[in-house]
Amino acid sequence: MKQRHYNAGDIILKEGDPSDFAYKIVSGEIEVFTDFEGQTVILGMMKAGEFLGEMGIVDGQPRSASARAKNKVTLMIFERKEFLRLICKDSSSAYRMITRLCEQLRSISRRLAGSTGTMKPGDTAGGKASVREPQATSAYISSKSESTNFRFTVSTVSPQLGPHIPKEGITVTKLPFSVGRLLPRKGPELFMPIDLRLPDSRPFRLSRQHFALYQGQDGCGVLDLGSTLGTEINGEFLGRNFGKDFEYLKPGKNRIVAGGVDSPFVFTVLMEPV
Image (cartoon, rainbow, N blue to C red; front, side):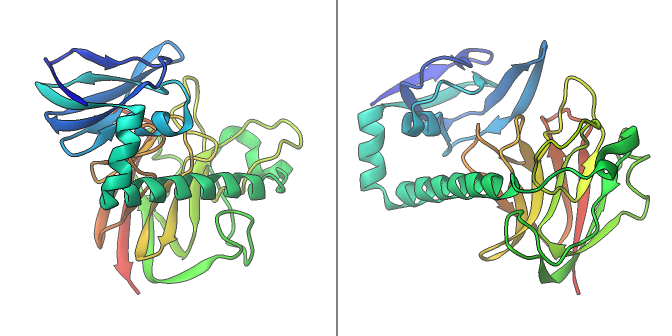
C-alpha cells in the first residue's frame, strides 16, 4: 500500500487497462469518463472516502472507464492482495463490497428472468415514448408490483423529453417502475419489460434497461439496471463504474440524470406520502 498525489487533469487510470490496483480517495475529487461512440462522456464524480476500481480487483475485468483528477488528489493505492486483506479486516468495507456483489447478482437474476418476455409489436412503434400499463405480475425485478406508502410523480424540464412526458408528469403508485430506451421495430427481440420507453438517437445516452424506481429494504429508491453510462440521483452516482447501484429517494423533489452528467435525460421525481 502506498500513497500517491495527482494534479488537476492527471490521468489516474485508463479504460481497457488491466485492473491491477484499487484506489481509496484520501482527498480531492476524481472525474470518471468514457470514450463513447467518438464522444467523451463524463459519467460522474468521486470524492474522498470512496474507492475507485474495486470491482475490477474482484472480477478481474479490464477497466470499464477512465478516471482523472479534477483538482489536487491524494490516493491510497492497494495491490490486489492488500485490498482483499483490507476487506477482511474492515467490516464496513466488507459489508459494502458484499452488498455491491449481491446487487450485481440480483441484476443478473433480473436480466435472466426478464429474457422470458417478448417484445410486443405495439411497444416500439413510431419513435414515440411508450408507457406500459401497470401489471399484476412481472418478470422484472420482483414477481409482482408492490404498492407503497408513497406516490411518485415523474416529470422533466428537459426540452428533449418535453414532448414525451406530460407537463403534469406521470403518476406512479406501484413499484418497480422502470425507464429505458425505446427500441426500433424489429421482430421478436427479447428484453425485460420497461414501463417508460423513451426515444434516443446515436450516440445513445439511455440504455435499453437504464434505471428503476424500486422498493428497497429500508425505503424507496433508484436502482441502476446495469446501464452503459450510469445514473445520477441527487448528486450521487450509480452504476458499474461507481461504488453502488442503488440510492434512496428523499421525500419531496429528487433529480435523476441517466447517461452522464450532461445527458438530456433529466428527470424530476416527486415523492409524496399517500
